[in-house]
Image (cartoon, rainbow, N blue to C red; front, side, top):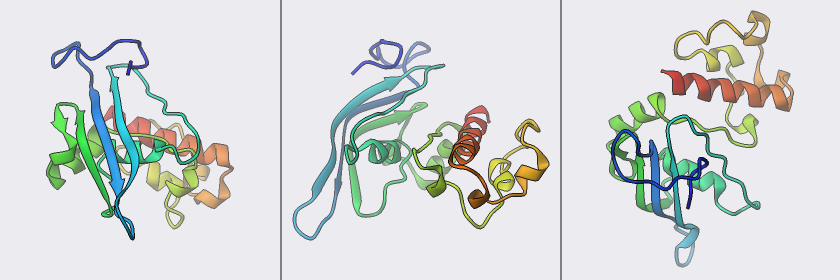
Length: 167
């Protein structure tokens, strides 16, 4: 598969991808045999590129994103290769994954209401790291997710992902 910039990964090095996914397969344990939610996904993302994953409901978009950040539930098993910033995510230690998620990985799901914590003010969620450039008005920062429109919730989640990518 080609990246958003139309280039195929050429391997490690300064011109290589910052995210490289090869033959990603994710299966979930069920009452019978395992169910494959994602089969054979390949893509690369290079520096200064953005990847958007689109598809029908149930096609594995969210499961793919969760696998890239190693946030799959315990009932899921990922196979293949997911390399982010030189780290093989599928076999990385929990400590390395925490650093990777805080420093290198961010994504925005379609429904930001499930990303935002409903019992914490939005400002606290956005500014858990360093203050996010003072661009969010203080009054909004003290509000809760249910007090935002869907679009405002999405922008808050984008700000959180953007901030994580800048650390």
